[in-house]
Length: 458
Image 1 (tube, rainbow, N blue to C red):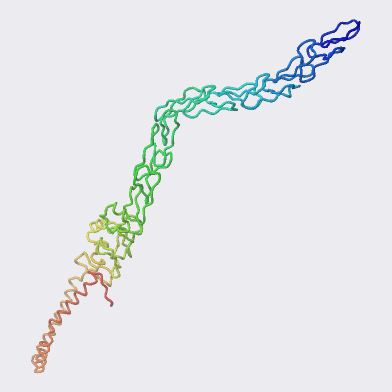
Image 2: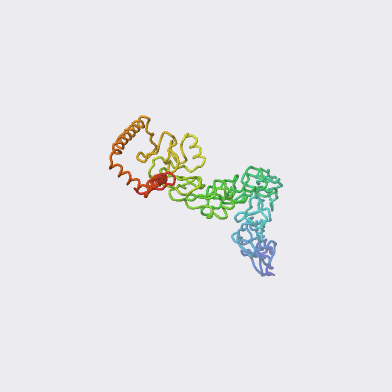
């Protein structure tokens, strides 16, 4: 008798016995003459099987597969019944996928995976580190630290104060270097810190920055302090910028206060204390008086500049007079010492006067042999002895002539009557004292100009 071929086998007919299906093929029901291949996405690794298994995660199964084929390294699959390698997904960056992976594996700290489809994570190179997992790259080791291969954190260096360390490429302990000028280094792993404004590090290897002295300042990261410019000051140490002087004061380069007057003003009291001048500037600094020159700062009452053709009576007055009758008022350049030296060197010149001239408005002559001539606007030589002789001769001749005339008239009776009347008038009027008064008045008026600078209308 003929019987149905059993499931899991094939029967070709005739006298041939049933043949078990080979791995990768099955017969699900009896009476089949041919085994069927497992469909794609399934497999069968046994003989004489009546059914196929679903393809497992991390693998794929083509048609007729006798075993699952794992996803290639750098890919994975968390699904079943994949029928080809194209169904496996690429491993994302920061992760590694070995052969047959069912899920990406995040790179541990100290390793990384750049890009996708990585089969394994790489360790961080020396001089870099990575403290996170699943990283796509590593971080450069900071200054003052070192990082060996595969480092998951920075290891601090132990540098002395005044020195600092750089990260090394080989991951070994870094060398310590002197802190650069303009910066401070606290030691350990700390990098150099730039000096703040008002502080400096003049030499390399300093643990802390030093304050600038009063009158100086500095910018950030400076190795030296700079003096404050004229017109500005700093009163305290460690200042990042200079302060402008209050009106109307000024200062010299590198000053710690503003103690003298600016251009266009003069200091009324040269003996005043700097603190008082700074606190009450308008009480001490006054506008430059008329006809004076205060073109430079630090002008005082004694150093007022007086232009040529002008004169003042002393170094302590602001009354400045125009020399309208003299061309020898030299003025002054604004220095009491200059005026004194000039007087000593000239051998005969008053302050503010040219050589040979002195006194008010320079209308006095130093030499006893000269007199001031308003016509010549300067000193002129006195008349010679010959000229005095001629004048004396003329006076004598006039006196002799008058005497002869007097004697002739004395003999006449009319002269006697005239003389009597003249005596009466003289006794009543008093010509002699009045003549003395007129002469004295003339002497006073003649000295008003030279002594007091008074000019009378002609």
